[in-house]
Length: 333
Image: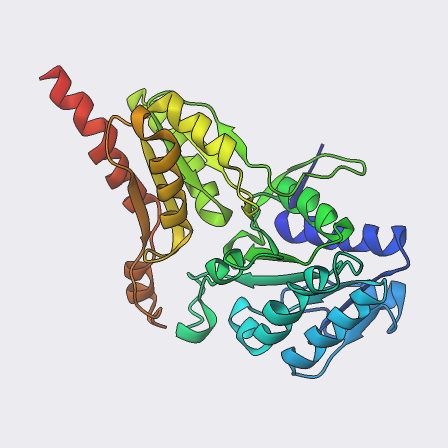
């Protein structure tokens, strides 16, 4: 397996899907001549031309609407929205059109549309460019929402998204673009809606996604080495549909659960998972479910203030200490 960055995994998948299927095309702001704000589309305009790599005006509502119409006619558009914060300018097209067309046409009109968009904090992009808005889309029936944490998952899930006949919101965390990982060769896909246990464990379960799933995995490995604490990490990968079975099975095994997310705490993905565990695994819990999330404030530009507002390894370790390590110390007293 080759070791490549998250960014390269996305780039390679776009190129391979453009070569594989002539119905696939890309559109978005500055993705052609400028090669995208994060260079995911580097070199694709030169190879495929302006009819399949389309530079658009700064009008998210316009080009997302154009993509919805193209998908209705049988094409497979992949839209790049420069940041998830700009999806607010296309919510009508995403929520009232892309998500509803299949149902309103009685199943006769698939809408194979992918919307790629990065988000997340830690880059000093200030309040209006650092949000995590995935819960908005995960709330909407008719959309699929994925949030990979590794280059291998990014490639397998993006390929699945392009080939899916439903609209897929493909979430990319900015802090992951330069992260490297081993990626299998060949035409592999990862089913949308299938979580993975990225580390087996027996003492407690941490449930997470996107960048925080990678942070959780690193924390779990350190705790195993330093404290002999066995933490299981469930990487959701897909937020809608959500893999109930993998989450519940893990919690029933470890009897303790922490939900770890970069987003704000209230009304979020973590709350949904906590409700799921409460409903389907309550009798197996030895302790209350804990949620670890970022502070509920718009992210500041100041680096120290931004870091103070964002959750991370420190906050997760504190939650694990309260839920498992402290209990172990009391038990040995």
